[in-house]
Length: 253
Image 1: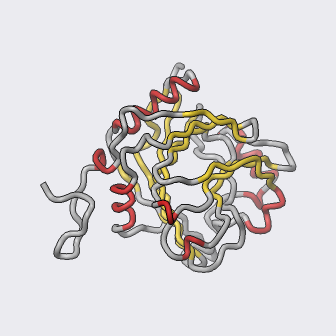
Image 2 (image 1 turned 45 degrees about the vertical axis):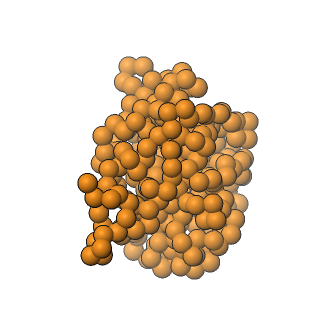
């Protein structure tokens, strides 16, 4: 079998087993936190056996653009990119599912084809401390977002912020509320035009953040407003890396 997670001698990239790149610690621990006394988040700092193999995969492969809007700022001020991995039901997903069942008392299943990356790197200095706040997914039903941070210790800055919309008082938005919310607040649509919340930050109140750590896992209901937290310009030197996947409530539950 080829040696995994390393470039080949000919300059190409070797195949890898994604289950090995995202191997789990069978004795992983989770602890719940209430962010801003409102957002129920599960955190694990040892679910991934080692964050570095998947970090190497993302660092050593081409990253295609994700959102690209005519007149937008992607590939002008920054690179906002995404890999998509169509994968089977990995042990990682199964352990996340067990944690959701234990702490939220909800049975879930994979939502979508598998796994996505968030590969972000600055070209110019940031124009805000936060990306655009948003909730995840237009799918009906209850969805959980799962984020795994992959940067090394010296590459970690900020994390994930959670928000309240000042005008409406909302801290969350379900799929069936999305159309009405953005019809009333069209400037807040995350349409790929700009990664940074910028001048719209006054519309939002930060209710709390969770710090990035190597290999840290966050689990939270996807309807809560959240965004990447960037307190500095560290990511002009190398990319901010994580992988994300989603779990949905089992139909009929």
